[in-house]
Image 1 (cartoon, rainbow, N blue to C red):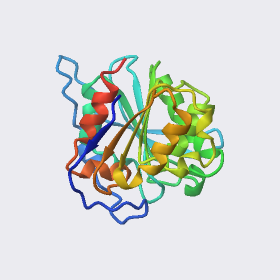
Image 2: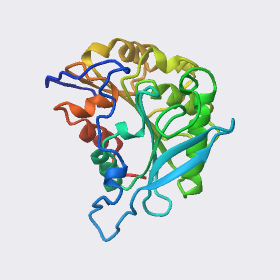
Image 3: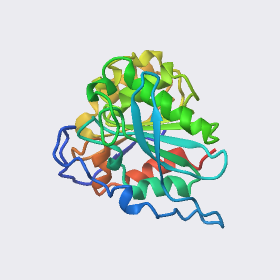
Length: 254
């Protein structure tokens, strides 16, 4: 069982609507950065991509390609419009590419450079369409295996897609600060997935612990609990090795 309790202090805000939304370098500032894969393969620079959902909303994302057929990670950020694809640290994305993953950091509808109504990203059926379109793009780029990494109410879309998505089923999911909003549209009991990691600060432990107790009696799912109050992708800004913990759980791309 990958259950940890880490005891480093942090002062990060816990609210999705905090004014510290942009906690990472923008992809534009680091577009020419290539991950060191440890061999002679040099991953291409980030590619700005556009995609259109089934209901006609144009979304924008940063695609970090890898080898042909590489397993793909879809990153789903915290609540739009306050947060967007730049909330994911470039160092974290590069760490994923070091492990052989292709990565798509998506602006959910209503966030960043994407069109659409922000509240539809997490309320009602349309948020799942964002993931549908993103996974279709990843499949078109050769991905045959998928991992979803979602923060805060990005977990709403992740759960909606995992249960009712139109494309590749996820082989694993990572949820950073899941909560009651995770089940806005889909009951967690409908999820049939063995590989799920929940990462959260101690003050947000109640929902993940209750969810695991009710829906995972066999102990398939894992958790990492951190000290402090950092919420979602703000966990990356603490003294904890969040990227390392996540990477160790996922392991190399398949």
